[in-house]
Image (tube, rainbow, N blue to C red):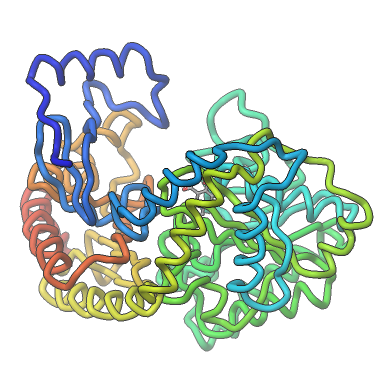
Length: 464
Ligand SMILES: Cc1ncc(COP(=O)(O)O)c(C=O)c1O
């Protein structure tokens, strides 16, 4: 199939209808017209005007295997022909097969899965399981994290973008701690002299709250919204030990980092630790259909085998979603996409570090595999952020005031899709795992060109 070509009038009408009939997500930009996508192939997509884009975000960092993969589409079609859906009161074949597959490919004794439809639901299930298992309600997580958009997840994720809308209910018993963001350490320390004070602060918080009242500590192994925060060596081992000693469960949200993204099938493998509960979505189906999953270790599984878990969705273990996921996981394994992400990540990281040598606006480049962050700064010595704190909410959305908005708008005009962690100067680089060196080169050439234009327009680097 080739890209569809809509006329100017048709595109205008679709934009008008989108504005008229769709609830706007997040902070709407006045007059902004989101692209209307019609076609995808590998790492490229086309809009309704038939313009082609190279996408360094793999849509919403989820289409790991690339767009329009025929093997997966055929597997989904086959399942639709056989049985698209079965009530969760029964079992269905792909659901059982997928639960078995997850038990096989996840580390340690993670063994039983509850299926939902999204990352938010997977996380909601994780904290509910933890609370019921522990008989206590408090959850500790990071400030600046995002774990989903339902009420519980807005409360777990500390990101102010989610929490500060007037009128929103927030669960006050959910507590937050700083992430191990070494580039801008909350405690103004440097690793390794800091002796992982940020991990000690987790223990301190658990003890002050009362360990018995805390159900779980929940985090992404590499916190994305806080800025692609790769923790220092032994941070996770120390947190695992703290959880073991206090009895608090450890939940990893691997919605973004799971399924080969970081150069391992699951990011927890980088530190050789196994959480008590892990959550998945995004890469579990590479976005071809919605699916979320929460996997638990043996002791938690045994508990709920006896007690039961008072929770269900109409679409738990959806046959189409599970069959699609099995086909996607086959591709991760067959094409060794974790190794590929590791190698291509090394290549892209080297290229980005080269760019950092040439472009003083790049303060830091970090990441693992194809999960990277490029932190832009107005001044490298002072680490002054790119965005002025004095911008009004309107100016923050305006490309003439906000350099990050200008940067992504200009890149889009050139046919390149990039995006930043909201409200930060951190570009998140999470391309499709099938990206080639030539495509990385093409994307980074366009990125550097756009960065130079942005610096010229906004007067970066600033003098100290
Ligand atoms: C780390 C993380 N957790 C949870 C979610 C929520 O997933 P979903 O949008 O599928 O509900 C997201 C979404 O971007 C995420 O990045």
